[in-house]
Picture 1 (tube, rainbow, N blue to C red):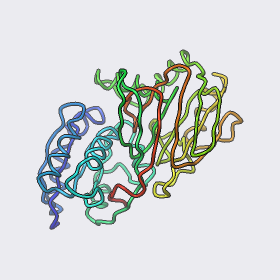
Picture 2: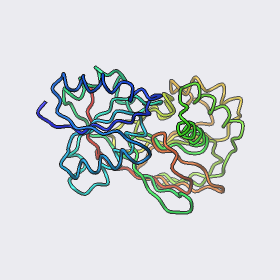
Picture 3: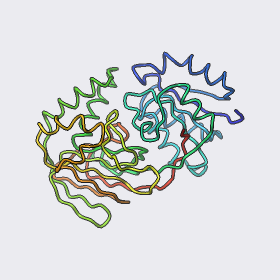
Picture 4: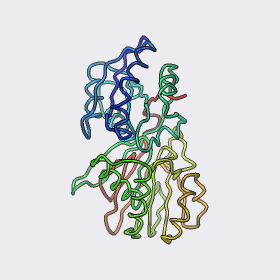
Length: 307
């Protein structure tokens, strides 16, 4: 490979799988002719800072080895940097995280050889990126996302998962446990929602705004989303019984839950959400803050390696 890559590894991804397998991965890269420098993350926002420094130093091709959270931090570095246009930089992902939901939408299998061949082949895709505005400890904040923003019940689960990650506990069963424990405490929140020029007032259980189809480790919460159509897809789950939520769990994984009468789908370029009481927000699986929110779309702002 004539290009020189910067490789960012989250050693804690996948129950420390990235750390354990780095020798295998580094040998794969070297044996396939990759020229690269690398660095491990040590905590939150390390991937963002490592990517930013690499771009400042001339890097234009980045490989992330980690999960959706690591990917999200690097995306934020790519979009916010002022050195070059965001699409001058190409990003690839070896998905070793708990969810790997971004990979699912673009059909990137979480297999080392497969991920490497995708980057080696050099085929790229320009996808949309979302921009979220929200509150964090009383401060106006913003952050970009490449996959899905989840609110209400969805974000409450993500917050519990993030807390578990900080305690070095991960896994799909743990996610499902958090899903059901969050369900027991869940409440409906009255929301005022504006999607472009359409206004909606409703009691909301959960909602998603996104670019990709999946979140929560394979749940197809935005089954009609297209990553480069210049539109945000929105799924609203309105008043629904807790028993119905449990019954619909398996349907979340194949997208058929959208047939439930409490579920409504929308599309738009701008979304604004206000709520009577604060509701949580997660972006690409990472808890970031609470309402009020607004979302915008940046069409084809991120260049990624795809099959």
